[in-house]
Length: 423
Image (cartoon, rainbow, N blue to C red):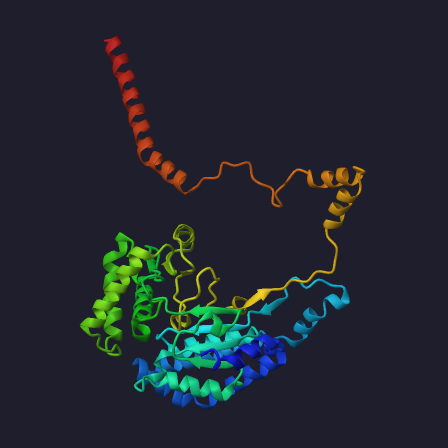
């Protein structure tokens, strides 16, 4: 396998994709090839996954949109300014270099989107791509062979290659990054939870969650696994869910008992292994949503909506900001290479070390010893928090009637005592 990938390794070492114009031409050809094969791609997606016509079209359209978005990040003028910043005596603190080779192990779910989008992000960042597709030998699947055909015809041979088996570090070379997309495995599973509060629009919420749960066969990593409902609106919400289920029942394909058992096992594995939620969907009034989002640990929170474009493709890598449009940020496939030409406080530190005179040290100490002050003046305190509100409400409900009762007893007691004394 090492010899088979030699061309890709050489291209990565030569820095062939460091040229932003070369990256642009590669994405242009990829976009053109995909647009010219829209019918064949959507047909293959439907056959392999069983998705509806609309779902297959959505997957293909979102793939094209991602390629356009990655292409839009390639600013030739900005790249030249950053490249020649040192020649002008300027800093280039944001400069980044490609990793070299991006090795992609795709998920079976939305395979076309998962492969093309990850490859597009890697190329936009200036990397060569190696894709592991074990299904290449499986003649029953159409998408894997179609992916190989389209990417090979669109991209230069040294830019992308495919392997049927896992590649070793020696095969990939010293500079590479591995992308494992299958987040449904037990070791990587993360739970997705929806929370329905009493301030939510129940009918709209039910329709949104039912659609998110069953879209694309219900296999999306961002499909809600558990729905937590406020007990005061439980009956109304369940009724709305049943109505929403009845509306989409006609378009749902039959699910075998084996699929149901597998989905149940996956949910149980997620429940016990998740440390942080993959996503939380919070349906509530804005103030309640803020509180729930603050104290429900998740990689991303979405208030009163489910971004359906997020349902297509693999989960966002952990410890990476969730972007609803771009699944893989370009920075994920690049490394920092900051360049500085201007002097900083290090000159003053150098003078302190070099010069025995304490003048520089005293001057620097006066600068750093200034008391710290917040940019925004703080109030004197006394703000009423969430729990304090509960305490005050409780006191108002039980304390005030008690005080009134004691006052009334005292009044009538004194009155009775005075009348008894007079008689």
